[in-house]
Image (tube, rainbow over the protein chains, first blue to last red):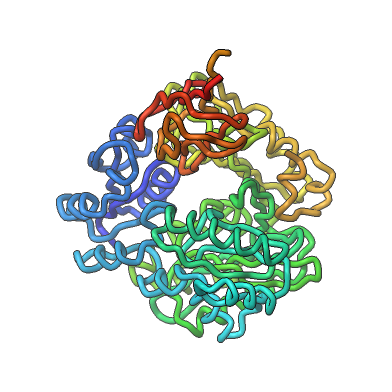
Amino acid sequence: MFNKVLVANRGAVAARVVRALRLLGVRSVAVYSEADAAADYVAAADEAYAIGPAPARDSYLNQDRLLEVAAQCGADALHPGYGFLSENAGFARRVEAAGLVFIGPSPRWIEAMGEKTAARALMAKHGMPMAAGSGLLGAEPAEVAAAAARIGYPVLIKPAAGGGGIGMLAAADETALLAAVERSRAMASRSFSNAQVYLEKLMERPRHVEFQMLGDRHGNVRHLFERDCSVQRRHQKVIEEAPAPGVGKAPAMAAEAAAILAQLGYDNIGTVEMLLGADGQFSFLEMNTRLQVEHAVTEMVTGVDLVAAMVRVAAGETLDTVLPAEISVQGHAIEARVYAEDPVRFLPSPGPLNRFRPPAESAALRVETGYREGMAVTPHYDPLLAKVIAHAPTRDGAIAQLSEALAGFEVQGIKTNIAFIQRVLGSEAFRAGAVHTGLATELK
Amino acid sequence: MADLPIKSEISGNVWKILKAPGDAVAEEETVMILESMKMEIPVMAPRDGVVASITVAEGDAVAEDQLVATLKG
């Protein structure tokens, strides 16, 4: 096991990783920007280093500074959390070259899954179910139109190096297609410094179902079942739950995905994201080669500490020592992401947390936050204020418990999406388990 | 007629200014792009017109409801 791990992140996930390290008896090192000097995760770590001004590019994305701190503090591994540099293969390679273990899959996996058309081709070759799609689109309008015609309208244009839903645009016919491809390229170029885009068949009201995977450095991969993350706004998740309501064949799909990844030699934590069509068919969307924001949902229903597990396999332990022999789903867990945003227009709402009273934690209710009353939510980072996760024997029970917890969550000084989450939790469609990726917009 | 104020809907930073005083804009055309919490938020012209002034610079921090530009009256 490692002696000291640098946590190259901030807020709730940094706090989560520090907690797992403490449990494992490993010293933790936090890093913080000028905006985060007073944050709780900084105080919770065994050591902490300032890494620069508030903007992420000057701090949490500053690879040179992070590697300098790693050398200075004598860490033997680095945990990237999620977001920031967690899916940057170049950074993972630099961490390894500096003699540290990068806690996550090998850089070659980050690379293989980072370019979406190559990832689709690799997965399709190994038998992963896949909806129709194109390769990278060329510049010629005729070629673009031909690719769309082969797939059949409507199509979805997606940046090949993308994430977070940025630059994803739908097109119902050829005229809309060519204009949308140009817009998507411009957005992709700006956000990912890569203008390449490709097409996928647009599914009507699909569900987003994803599968939690864990591999070790010895050729073993196991799954920890599925999560349904269909409730999204702007292609970003708002409510996640496990198990996926009414998807009896999810465990079989999870086992199939784990077998494919084992065959490929996948070697740490990852999530296979799929769409589930109205016809009951799964199709591969992408694979995230990192810890997910919604990992706690899986932890609640399986009892497995995923963060500790990914650290242990990165240190060389085998899956059979890290995971119980039998993993089963106990009850139902639902997570709500409380964002600092306008609940109607979904616009960011940074500002001071004049009042910030999250619900009290219990065995059945978990709250993960990087904030505290009196702190400010800055415009520099993502809008996630807190994750509230309820666990109950039944789905109805989990909904009731989450709703009650959110009703007692007091925030003043900024706008939050709590009212919106409550509207979803109270809706007939959600209660019936009739979720799909367009539901949030319909209930807005 | 007084110039028509265009205000920021959010707190954030000015990422890119796309129009200059004297430029003609159509209704819903993007005048500038703000950035907040990893999102790009366009500031759009409320109607057709000509930009009278831009009252912020790229990189500036803006508050919700802050004046960022005006259209000629």
